[in-house]
Length: 203
Image (tube, rainbow, N blue to C red):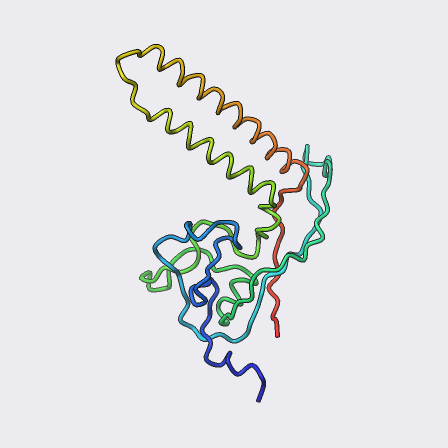
């Protein structure tokens, strides 16, 4: 008899549906991004696991054989939350889910359609703090520009109103360009990169 008897009755919980504190993309997005449907797994868990960032060398490749420019080394080690998993999700998080398609009777859809395989992207590496902040700023600026484009223009004082809106839009666009330039720099230098993950069992 082991001390981990609670696992015998634990259900697989790869998406946080059971613990009432689901995380979207490792906590990058808030709970407001969860959506109306919470995916869950009905299978019993066979162990407790977590994703570990494997790290590596990253950077911008200027040409096919030019090597990495301004290479950036990632030590890895970022740890995801502990998840009770079934055998199916252990396999999927280790080698990736089967390709999207149907069972032999062509009635039941299987696999993953679109998106990213879970073990190919470390959220902490793809969205470091500065990149998260810049992305939030870029989204806010884009929303403000979209609101200007959609705003009705009153007939009275049409030219004056259009000029003011045009000036505000141009200012927002300049700010957006600065944010995007900084994000591009983070990508070029490898500080924003796509690190692979390794699923490891925990006690």
